[in-house]
Image (spheres, helix red, strand yellow):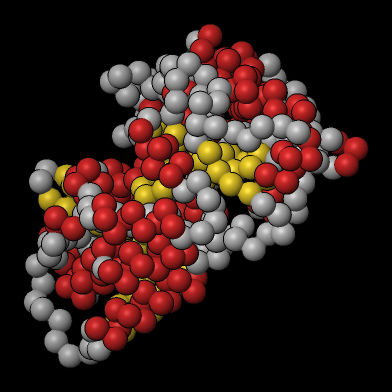
Length: 416
C-alpha cells in the first residue's frame, strides 16, 4: 500500500451521518441472509487475492453473510469515500487511516463497535481508535518503512551492505558509489513528500509540529537540513522529476528492474519484490542524530449509516484479528496483523525473502507516527509535499520553501 494522501476534509459530511449515528450500532440483530459491502484500499496493488481468501473464509464461517468488496487505488480512495459519505452511499465497512480517524469520528460517520475479544489486539493500536472510552474503528494492520537494497548491485560496486547502525552519512556515501547514470543505475530513492519529511525531521532530532499541535515547528536549521537530505538526492543519487521521479510506481518499477540500489519504502512491498531476478534484503532506515522509522496503522470503520451493523462489525473483527487473517498476512508479507500474540508473530521471521525480517521489528524500537491536526490535515500534507517539490525542482530554495509551507500550514491549522 502506498502512502500519498487521504482526503480528510469531511466536515460537510456530518449532516449525512449524525442523524443515523445514534441508532445504527444499537439496531436490532440481523435476521436471515444479509449482504454487506466493504470498500478498501489496503489490498490494492497486489493483495486483492489475499483479501479474497479472508473474505471467503469469513463467508464459510458465517453462511448467512455475504460480503461484496470494492477495492480502490490508494490515491483515489479518499475522494471516493468522501463522495459516498456525502451522498449516504458509503459501504457498511470501509478502511480508515490513522491520520484521518479523529475527523471521521468527530463528524459522526463511524458507528461504535463492541469488540468481542479485545485482548486479542495490541492494546496501543486498539486504543488509537477509541474516543471517550468507545471503540469507533478496529485496527486492521500496521506496517513500517525500511531500507530495501539490491545486494547484487552492492556486490558489483564493492560496497558493504547497510546495517542498522548506518547514518545518513553512510547512506549518502554508499549511494554515490552505487550511482552510475551512464548505465541508468541509481544509488538511492526516497519520495519527496510530507510523509518522508516528517520522518526525516524525527531522524534529525526535530519535529513537524509544536508540542501542543497548534502550529508547525520545522522552520529551523534542523528542519532545513532534513529537507535538504530529501531534495538534494534528486539528480545526484536519485532520478530527477524530469526523469520520472515522483510518478506513480516509478520507484517500485525502478527497483524491480535492477536499476536501483536502495529504496525507502514500506514492508507492504515484500510480495511485489518476491520474484525479482536479483538478491535483495532490508535494513533499518538510517537516521542522523537519532533513529526514527515511520509506522502506519490502518483500521476498519463500520458506517453509522449501515443497515446491518452487527454483521458489519462481525466482518470487521474477523478481517482484523482472525487466525485466517494472521496466516494470510504473514504468509504474504502484507503488512502485519494487529494481534497481541507475539508467538504467532514470531513465525514472520522465517517466511523467506527478505532474509533480515528482524529489521521490521527492530524498526519499531524508535518510531515516528504521522503528525495529526484537528483542522487541515489533508491541506497540511498537500502543502508540505508541494513546497518540497518546488525546492527539489529548483524553483525555490529549501529555506524559502519551508517558510512558505509554514505560513500556509499554520493558516490551515487555524482554520484560515
